[in-house]
Length: 227
Image (tube, one colour):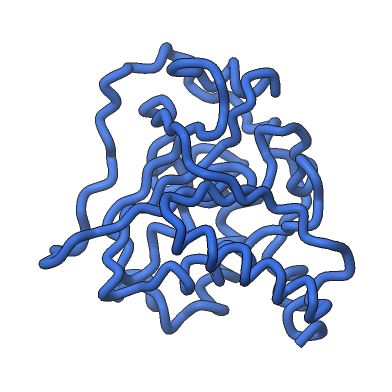
């Protein structure tokens, strides 16, 4: 397991800096953020929410939105202590927030366990307050659980991975109760798909990561992303 998992992790983790995101729109955030993600799947039952932090949310959103059963994804900030933080404030590392992704999903189509599998395998959970060249508490690995079941599964999965030796170093992922989430500025929403041909960061960093993710999780992708 260690060899397979390590190879998978090495192929998915890209060592580059999200802090060098190249000319972004610094317009002030609209508190009534309009989500750019449409509900791509009609859900007959109740949906559930998962909130993860695993590095740059541009990358995280690009991956999770492609999974079957994911109804919507929202990039934002979770785990901090400032009301309605801006991207610039979060980037200082002084607000306590992590760049996060809130995922609305249909548990009849995809389970929390499956979301956790994607979470663990698409970033390095052993580096404290860091993903690749992105350094700071805002890039920490975290699972903000919404109920006791999510907490139990996250802790169980983390313990099992540590025991198996899947990683060379101990997992430092924070598993903590969900307290708040503020959507990021509008221009951050669905960023990769809106800027794939505009921002070099998308081509150099996000696109290769998404392509490798699609190969590993091809059976879990929505039809439009299976190619």
